[in-house]
Image 1 (cartoon, helix red, strand yellow):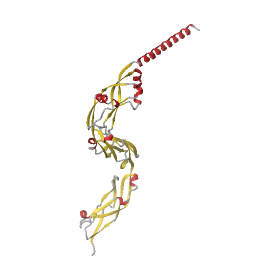
Image 2 (cartoon, helix red, strand yellow):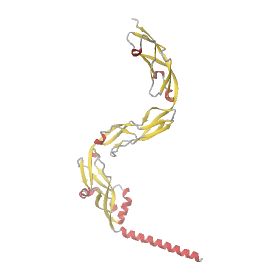
Image 3 (cartoon, one colour):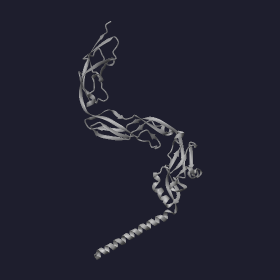
Length: 329
């Protein structure tokens, strides 16, 4: 073996021996330490029982966790810190069975009086010492109320140039059920969606929008998101012929003849929507009582088109001739 290789071999052996000695020292230290007794503070979940059985709800939030001091061997504390979040039985229990609508739980007094409310699995070998924080929990209860309210959309749709929204937006449900303390629920008249804007759309949109929760996080919702859809169509024109002309508010004893009895016009709107429009969907009329005069022969009719039609134009003919005579007896 060459001298340089031999020196490298010896150095590697020395480094390996040092790491081995260090690992052994750590192991021995952990073994000794883990058998000593220590105290530590651990965050423990708080579980409240018998709230729903009383048909009550919180007016105010209560802490979800408490900082609790425990005593035990080092290995038990290490085990707890690693595994406590995986064990459901690790918790502090508060029982609301016999309390009034307002009550202060002084935690150390409560758990000294009811040690069975401290749930620690026996396999953890820990001893409860005290609750460090909070020192007390104020419980404020109200009647539990359930209410169904309308959903209002705050979604803004901006079609691309040459396109239009057709129809109203469609939501999976127009109602959401909310529940919680009566003083919070009874004043709620609507639940809105979150504000959202979609620009430059040239196709129908189908997406999920979220309901805007109230600042009160204790309010329960039957659902928090909903399917939202809106039809988008290209703008087009169509001529509608054979639209009947009607006479409104005719006077008793008079016969009114119109010439012509039918007109045509051009409507503007979503291409698929206007394709389904029939002549009877458009109202053309002359209000006899307000418009007729013995000295007048031709009259401009009033035109009413469905809301989804953007506009109309090119009424043919533009004026209607009225011939008025008395009814024959």
